[in-house]
Image (cartoon, rainbow, N blue to C red; front, side):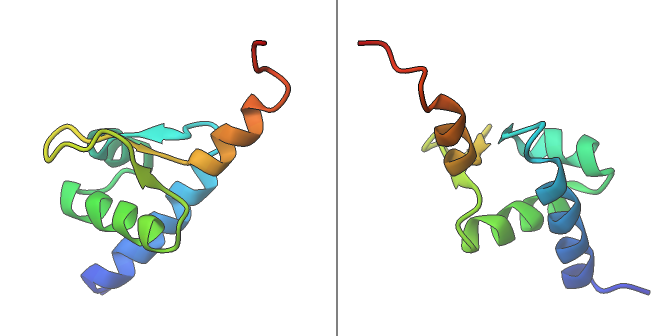
Length: 82
């Protein structure tokens, strides 16, 4: 049986693979995306935040959104309006 930490790491791996298609996320969205529980989804997001992959972008305590900013920045290259 996997520990909570192992489940979070596995969910973080699965989430990381989904980021190109889902670069902006919520905890509820991650629950559905990787088929896990809310606490495990929150921990998976926290793990990806710790390594600099995701950033919390709302500044709120509830209904937070997390983004893969480096990926989004790369997508924006060449699309700037002058």
